[in-house]
Amino acid sequence: MGGRWRGAAVGGERDSLSATATPNFEGPSLATTKAINPPLSDGNDTLTVTLVVTNTGTSPAYNVVVTDPLDGTLFDLGTIAAGTTPADFVYSYASPTVTYTM
Image 1 (tube, rainbow, N blue to C red):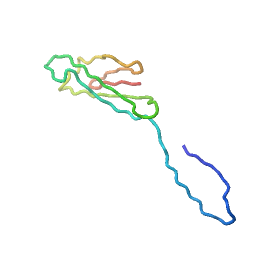
Image 2: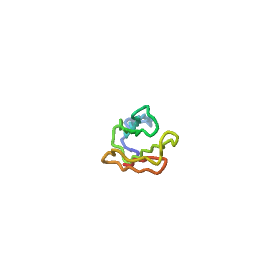
Image 3: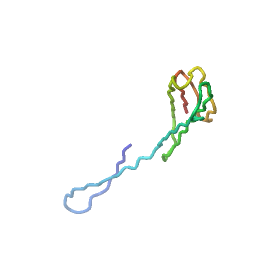
Image 4: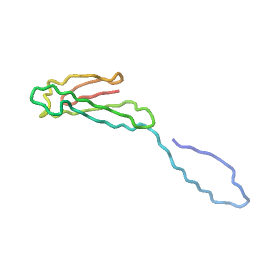
């Protein structure tokens, strides 16, 4: 986006004009955190993975996609199931990646 303005020069002689503008861009700024509970487990324990996305920006975020590729040496990829999904998100799983789409 660009802006343009006009004005009349003051004075009888030709003067050189200059200006400086500092743009202030506003927008979303997303931060993610991931927690696994329990943090220590034995084989066949059920683990709960919590992903939190926080918008610390100055405007809403749209079309957000969060992916979490899982390590098959840590998780039994055949046992992955949806837990609690926020109202604005859709859960999907295609081994080995969990995806939340807004």
